[in-house]
Image (cartoon, rainbow, N blue to C red; front, side, top):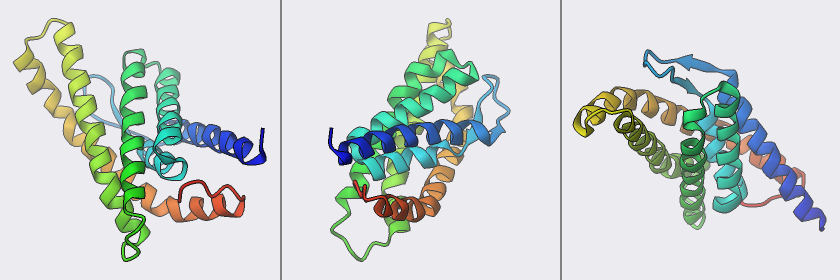
Length: 186
């Protein structure tokens, strides 16, 4: 195995672990019945997609976020989180790199332009999943859709916090990434 592949594997595992920690360390509880909380993990989800690219970034973000649900005892959300956060990172990373040729766009602007649509995937993904959970529990589709809408603003706040965290941390982590000689995708 080459040194570059080794560094890529280590960076992928490290970002997955940092995503888990960022999701679990600072939790702002929401008043929702399901025990939801706002966290800073979405910033790391976007960073995964940007630093590792859409493919490996999706793996690191999905696994890291899923592990936070496992450790938090939120088993019902584990499969959804794996897929939703992976899609969020993939979309954010893909969009960020599609803008790479636009030198007039500074990093925070690129993060916002890539991160906001990616976080829409997160908000929509959890909305649809939670509606499905309500329907599976016996609620009528219309009642489930209305009941789950209450959580959407909290997920929007979480997504916006993630975009801000990513915009602040990416220049630092991207620089450290370059210093280590593993400039993968920044």
